[in-house]
Length: 234
Image (tube, rainbow, N blue to C red):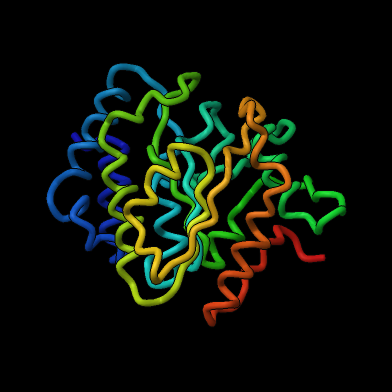
């Protein structure tokens, strides 16, 4: 019997996404990871996000469309909060603290941030790959699936963007994201590296770093249109 994550993988394969050329999908790793996650479901775990959203980052931002990459860790571990995009929040409560810090950096310098939504779908639709290191998590257990094999997909996706001729910019937030700098051809692509936006980051080296302004400046300097980082129309 096919499990929900294996079914989601089958549906993603049917989409014909350019990401399917990655070895992760071609050589069996995706099937092995999906089986591991479905085993957790069979054991009674609540796996998040909902299966149709697991591959949403890759669906909304196909490889040829990528202009920027933002890497996260794993989905929010509360049911209803995550929608398959790194840092994106659609839950009913106040925005997570890290996301508030992120949106504050997106606001005009000296201006008030718009915290009316945490849904980052517009970014994904404009070419920002919002990819988590693990595409799934268990309810109440942050980081539960970080060692199930999803990281291979993240590494291959970063390398695939780096291998293209079209310039892209990588926004690497925190040590785990910055560790993937070795996969990026810096002669062709830009890197905006900062600390992590989490309030638990004692260095506090994300506030004031203006990563969105810096990313757009790099894109424009390399012949690409800047990204509209707004989440709502003015």
